[in-house]
Image (cartoon, rainbow, N blue to C red; front, side, top):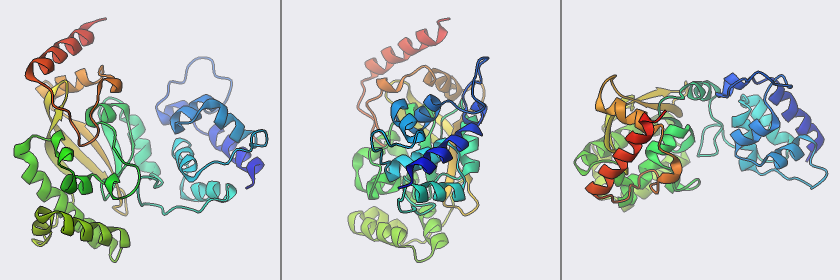
Length: 310
């Protein structure tokens, strides 16, 4: 592992990124041309001390970055595909597939757009509905995905195998979501061809879910581009939103963002969502805890009061 060259490469990549490129304020007093080390560490979910040791060559403590750490750094530093591969090469780690699974390298164009969507929930997912990266509002609205590896990382897989995954949507909407998920997966399977990951996912879902098997045999195909969704939030109740999808060129990743018409109840709820901290949520993506009407009403009033405070 060539840690000195790895550290030098990280420094040069950090220097070229401006705070505005990653949604951070520039501030009047910056002594470095690009990001600070602490900012890179924050974006990658690392400790500042650990990242600093990486840039210094890691000789002091024998730092050995994992593949997950390298993938997080590649996203934080907005590396393109060649730069991402070079980073893994310097660390002597296997270069991961470019668009598979939650550790996939996020398409730079989608990541750049995500950085600019600071006032609306947004996330980048794969064509198997595995979350790659998301902003704070998406985490607050949808909760954290319960799995980062394996089939359960896919929300489509959880939808048909875990009843709790459906609690994020009202029961009367479930049949429509099932049809849309399957039609979208049909399109992904055709696009990927003889892809082992999709083939295995479909085979397992056919065995575990009669509903999925029945819908799959209809051969309905439709790439998901825009939906009207009703999302059950534990404090704000049912939020009706428009969900838009922007697909990457190869169709394997997509940027999702949620909006509501100005002046609508959904727009008001999105404003209230911005003052809800993720620590208040016990729900994960696809898992909304049972909340009584009285508790939900009290929660709404508390949030509204906070929103109106100066």
